[in-house]
Image (cartoon, rainbow, N blue to C red; front, side):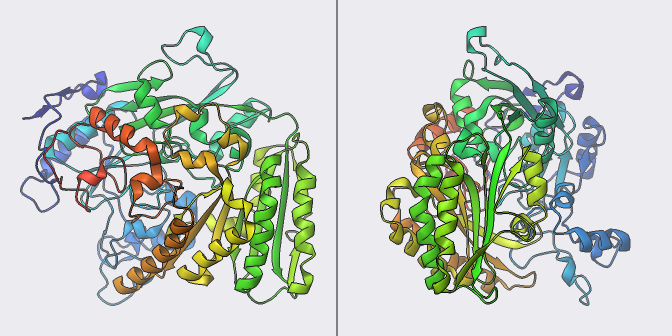
Length: 602
């Protein structure tokens, strides 16, 4: 069987695909195999792409001796490797550097000066397509079909499960295909006027990041509307974030990002452009609203409903430390603080507060919350929590505002708040350049009937993982998620709609860690997660912040929605063309994602 690609496809945006069954019973073709495309083949692809074929490189590549060495570029890497914007602009980089690497097969710039050091590409794709048009995506898919290549898709590299990188793969890089458009009203394609949205929207294409999208929305609507967005400025607004549900600090008011998604446009496995919304391709629309990225096609664009903001925002932030301001908080202090927060969470949740609390014993707890300023009873709820913590002085605990700030502050826009937060140490938790893995578990509302047990469970998970790593807590559910009218129209785990907290624990390692040290860290992380799994067995978690080796991932990431998602996957991609780690249908492949475990098509 074969695929024929007309070179005019780049102009006409069409593909002629003989069948989706090509190579369905074979492993992917990898570098070194006789099936691997010749240089002439790659040159022909580049011609159809008008020069957009690239060779992605690891972040540390220009620092290594030999033809790749570039002193100026190396200095740029050394100065900016923790800068998320720098990482976004390099097709071979990932925000968590370990996903550029395969264990100790790495290209760390810190090791470049070691005698005889060699840059090993690890998991970085062999080739990439820097897509500037839909036709580029179509041609990349067709070429991958023709040579049975593994395909990965990347927007900004905020991927903590290794879904947007794979050794020997062809990368579809969405960074250059980027646009933002706002409209005062919107009718989804194929719908009549009665099914139009009730207000303004924003349509985001390809690789645009949330910082740019929020600025566009607030500038165009004079701060009167907002979109549910991620915390980190450089998370892509039209990629894996929304496709896995997408939480944000305003989710307690407005739901997850997927709840606000009104329409998607994707390129399918056979190169077709499909529009999915409430009126057409309804099953696909449901699947894209939480069913995971890199699975059903290459997303071109998403249109989001915007939410009215009448009076700006109120923030509340603080540091919780030892009374003398120095030394680490111990497990008992952490447990007592968490118990107060657990007990007060019902009131904070009812008021609509969203936020983050980073418990790191060595320096204390950074705590940052936000709410639309017109919400009643918001400040009294937060003051009650602050005052109770302030009363723990006898336990050696103190609470103070961020340096030079008040506990509570008004912000005229979301951008104002983000700029204000970017000057504080607590926001540095989303910097790039580290090697780490997260894992998480949603804690259901019912558990908070016993706040002491909630606190003890989280501390027990921290202890099992190595207490010093701490925990990043999220209060990002609330009524906005639990009471969304879109509850039956989204495919992310139903556990979201029963939850209050999302604690995330981590393991991390140095650039020169051995495979044994990395494995030991993973073992501790999994032990910590098992504490949470055992305590909350009927819950699940957010697919973008789950563990990359989660054992029961189908249930954990999608719950009762998984069977329907798998059915849609089989319909949309019967040959299993799109495969990624712990994505829908990936259990039908080996752990490398390159060899099917059964005959295709499904």
